[in-house]
Amino acid sequence: MSHEVLVLNSDYEPLNVCNLRRAVVLLYLGKADVLHAHDDPAAPRLPLAEGLDVPAPSVLRLRYHVKRPLPELKLSRRSIFARDNYTCQYCGVQSRDLTIDHIVPKRHGGGMQWDNLVACCRRCNTRKGDRLLQHTGMKLARVPKRPRYVPYISLTKYINGTKNEVWRDYLPVFHDVGSGGEYAATA
Image (cartoon, rainbow, N blue to C red):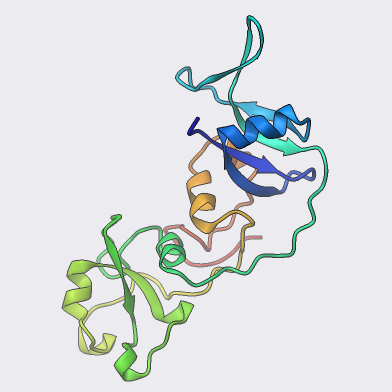
């Protein structure tokens, strides 16, 4: 039961991504309705009654509304990597083996802020070292900014969810996180 399920609020706003076991519990307790099931034939089927089984859900909608305060996007390694789409901001290499680079190094007064941190491959990070960007001859692919959109679901799960064709219908479109272009929100 490792399939992930998108959980929507009663107003179709994305709330969470849960595992299949949690989704089954929500369905069994009558707290949610299935909007989409997995089309994958390899996806597990849920036995509801003897001789009756249904495909595992992919998207659920809660029957009641959950009020949540707007979450605050925390600065973390994972959110920097997600914002930069796991791409080195100097050479453009896409990888899961990245480091965080301070554009203005700490010893030059650079801090831990959204606009001073970028995803960087190990080769470029070693090449840049603790020097200022203008002394290295290296250029950033784009100017880093704090993403304007804060999803209820984690930034990483939001970006992964945009790759799921069914989930895309329910996730708002924001080009300022995980995109290959400029950081400009459309919502």
